Image (cartoon, rainbow, N blue to C red; front, side, top):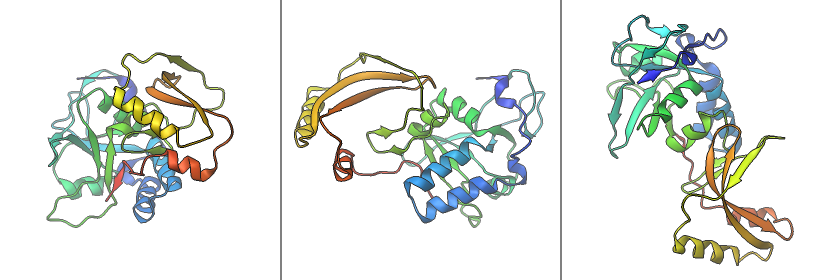
Length: 250
């Protein structure tokens, strides 16, 4: 697969071979308290970091470590099928975490957002952060970044909540969006469920189905809600599906 040269830009501030303390601390805090604020801090930390990724072999013309080359190269990531038959790849916050998983694997250092963009062009479903060999002790917090999270993070968008069937994120101030009809309507059962759910809120006047694309490049099928008055916080919570965090810290 062609790996664009923009993925090899210099980064003098964050060097995962020397440690990624902000990211590691954010992962640790999320493991202690999986709150929306800690999750936002984690996403922020990922977008400002570089990660070490194991590869089957170093592409010709490159050397192990953080990349600064400006030439196009062919890149392959090391992938496996997990116990749920999902294709996953690994990424590490620093060299010690990588060597705790495999002391001998070749690796490259990439900007996290560029890695996420690359993964979105493959069939990889999750990135496993800081896995470790079972015969060794865990030395860094870890977790999984799912495809849904990668979709947003690859575009530099931080979701405020990702549930099992829905995503929440805020449009930036003055950001333009394109709105149109989705290529496929939901099933009749889903539309009826939406009507039934909305009927339980006197504040809801109407529902609108549309496709929305943002300037960042993300496109999603959206249910717009027209309100006759503001919903109280308790009503907002009822509208949301049961919480199910997607990034799973370990």
